[in-house]
Each structure stands twice: as C-alpha cells, then as structure tokens.
Amino acid sequence: MWWFQQGLSFLPSALVIWTFATFIFSYITAITLHHVDPALPYISDTGTIPPERCLFGVMLNIAAVLGIATMYVRYKQVHALNPEENLIIKLNKAGLVLGILSCLGLSLVANFQKSTLFIVHVCGAVLAFSMGSFYMFVQTILSYQMQPKIHSKQVFWVRLLLVIWCGVSALSMMTCSSILYSSDFGADIVQKLHWKPDDKGYVLHMVTTAAEWSMSFSFFGFFLTYIRDFQKITLRVEANLHGLTLYDTVPCPVTSERTPLLSRDFQ
Image 1 (cartoon, helix red, strand yellow):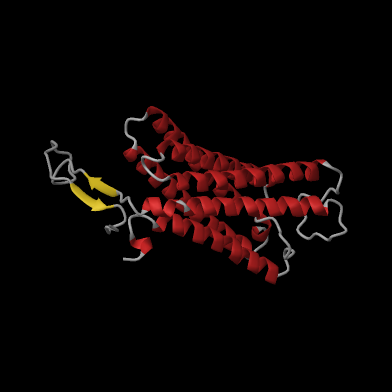
Image 2: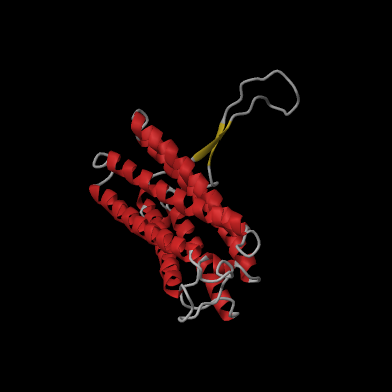
C-alpha cells in the first residue's frame, strides 16, 4: 500500500499539490502571454487577465473545497483523540471556524479579481491570509497540548517554526504594502501589472510580493505536516432509514447502512 492510500493522507497532499499547480499554471500562462512580469508578481496578478483568470478562478475554488475538507477531517480527528479536554475542544472548534473563513476568503480572491472589484478582492485576500495564519497558530497550540501523549514533540516544533515563518512573512507583507499604497507612487499603482526597477516603490513592491509567496509556501509546509496524522484516520457516512418506502407512513426501525465517506476504505 502506497503512503497516500493510508487513511485520508491523500487530502492534505491533494490540497498542497492542487493549490501549487494553480499558482504555477496561471503564472506560466500569464508570463507566456506577457500579462505580468516574470520577477515575482502578486499571486492574484497571475489570474487577473483572461485566459489565465478563468483557470485561476476554477482551480482556486477547488482548492478552497479541498481546504475545507482537510480542515474538517483535522477537526474530527482532534475531537476523537480528546473527547473530554475542554480547552482542546474549544480551540478545535475555533480552528475549524477560522479555517472555513480562510477558505471563504480564498474563494473571494478566485472569483473577484482586483481589476473588477478591488475592494472585494482585497477583503478576500485579507480574510484568506489572516484567518489562515490564525488557523495555523491555533493548530500549533493544539499540537503543543497533545504532545507527547498523542504525537511527538518534533511535530509541534516543526509546526511552530512554520507559524513563525508565516508570521514574519505576514508582518513584512503588511508593512511594505501599507507603505506602498499609502505613499504617493502614482494613481495607477493598484491596477499596475508591469514594474520596472526605476519605478517609484519598486523595492517595496518586490518585498511585498516576495513575502506573499513566502507566506503561501509556509501554508503549504504546514498542511504537509498533516499527512502522517491523516494516515491514521478514516471517516464513514451512516445512513439511517426511517421506513422501507419514501411514502408518508409511520416510521419503522430499519437496519442502518454504513459506507466509507469516499466509497472505499483506505485502511
């Protein structure tokens, strides 16, 4: 049995691979058509102009669905491992809410480009990155609470380093972008897709985009740490029938049917 066939470990793997492919395919398309500069454009800039906009939107929406599925499985796993720990239960619920909000922001970024509805696009980006960062932070606290009883200390330290990486990237991106957009570097700076080294604000722009890509890769690394955990969990769906037909009759007990969530058992 291959490693990705064990439990639900394919979920975080698919999330990372699919999201990375979304960024790379739209980047290559945008570069080939000369819609953006090759040197570190904003991630969303690679999905601003057709045809890459269509590809970026569809693939990023699928990534948001994969993200919600991955976070839900993580929520169920932590809950099953700690059914009576009140602090862990509360943090686990908070993490699920933060994760769903982050995926909602990701979907907004996918569907509202900055060239059409800039305010909605920015709100989606802020929601995706901020809630995603808080999600990582909450999950790292959960990892601290569960080690060494549930998993090793190494898992906690790896996730802590990834959270620090994410935090440094987020701070750099917020600082430089705030200076960039609050300064007088031109009226078209919001919609600008092509930058030259002698443009005003070029250095701030490059630091901001580098921090954005860096932050995204910290997310990738964090979800990859779920692979080993997800090898030890399988979800099932239980169907409870209230009668032998679908007519309005008096309910009678019927044997329940249990099937794997994804139509096959990965254990």
